[in-house]
Amino acid sequence: MNWIDLKEEKELDSIVALSFNKPQLIFKHSTRCSISTIAKGRMDKSDVDATCDCYYLDLIAHRNISNLIAEKFHVHHESPQVLLIQKGECTYEESHNAIRPDDILENVSI
Image 1 (cartoon, helix red, strand yellow):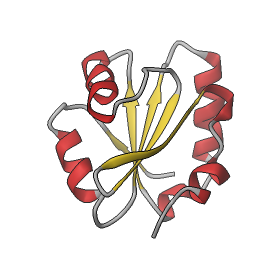
Image 2: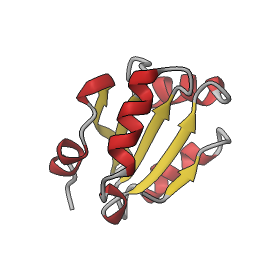
Image 3: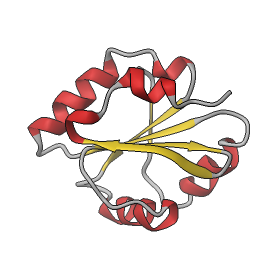
Image 4: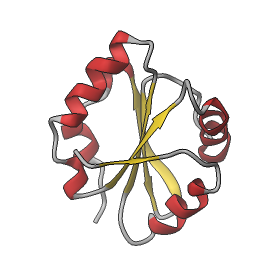
């Protein structure tokens, strides 16, 4: 998995713009949570990045971005959490043990 670190709020506007050409995935990870580590491990072994640009957010270090994601995409904050952004909208989101790469890929519209 080739992660793109998400470290600045302004990057969310770029993610939205890019989502009109290619699906964008945001993975919100808590470095203090064992469930988040398991979910990240599943993602690391996947090939979702062949279909989507995949962003990694360390939400402990960047809680402000995590809060902005919840507001911008109208989702409840969870951790861990994945959001699939397509055509400017969050079209799929999942959290905790329900994060599965195959489910993400099934929701990609190309």
